[in-house]
Length: 565
Image (tube, rainbow, N blue to C red; front, top):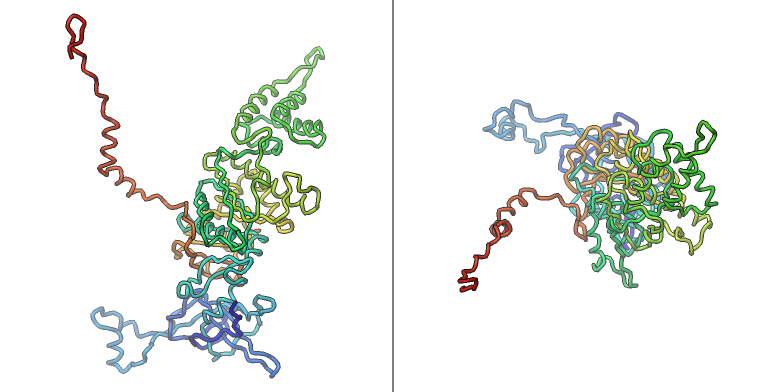
């Protein structure tokens, strides 16, 4: 591996410090060369040690604003037929760069290779100090916590403001998984594509992660291509496993549901029916004495046990709520996704070096909520009980390794202003999952509709093009201060461009997402092309044959009842 550069070696000296900026963490420099002055670009200045024993420090910063403060007179630009430079030459103005720019820089600090992080010197640069552009070679080391193909690394793309591929953006998988992450993007910005790149990296030989994807749209089927590709194989025989579970294969054991799960799945119920159902769950658990593998019939029996009343003569009889609840529970029993014994246990869903995709594109919203809640709750309990040694390898819930769960359309499962079965368990996992090795990744096109408590717990953010002002406002306090100026760039980002900020990188960066190795499964349909296909000659001919009336057989000619044909 190449050794880390000892300095930010100057690629180009681009300006001179004018003085401090609007706050103590900014400074302003003056330049006449705007070729390298771009929002989000990395620059640095040097602080010389006050003694021979004190080393010089190179203070990295990020350009956050620029303003044109001097130029040729406006009158020179009024005539479109004459070049302003020609007029300037006639009046004796011969400076090659007449424009002067004032550039604001947010200080990041100097990089400490021991701590592998930045330290802010809290010292403003002296006016007249030279400002330099940081070199590609140095940025490869100081913006990334890991290097390409290093254990625990994930190569997402390259630094957007530099030549394509010259500065790879590599994130730290340990930080990503342990502190949770969110991919936030508008429709068509490339969020699912970016998630696919991340999953490819997690299943690469240098990670071999245990990943589960909750996929409401069926967009991740193409991950199956990983099985035969050399990029994912290793000399020790490793090759990733890809397990696609279609809706027909999803089974959740009925006894893994709690009262609120069942309440979500049943049609609207009266207060009395809800009260009886709640009491039935209490009785059910008490009767089973800790063995919670009950069936719908067990629950119906408990409902009847709870709904007992007395008539005027003191005789006990069944109330009117139990039969109504029985009818609703029998409807639930007919659901193909909730079963008395069949079940997707943690051992079925998680293995190191395996990605499991739960396709839920044919499942109702209420059933998706309960399936997601049951799986999250079970995974959380499995990791807790395994680490505390409450269960052993013989238990179906034994989960002796960290896992990562990626949730598409997260605003459906944790909406901001409405109740949701998944929201509370997600809040619990996001706040406590780090201790037990359960990481969560949320993907949404509507961050403004995602619960703020849930979003605030995601310490790494991948933010792509977002135009909606409500969604933009929801991000202001979810991104660390050094990255907030980059949020101004959100409407201008194009497909595949992403702001990466938070715990997985040393400093927020603008990144161009790399090309996927596997095919993307969420491509937007080309409506005009499909319309035109309808009129292709072979399509027209096929429809004509399909719509043609059947040919009737002619009646045979007969003489005295004998056919003469």
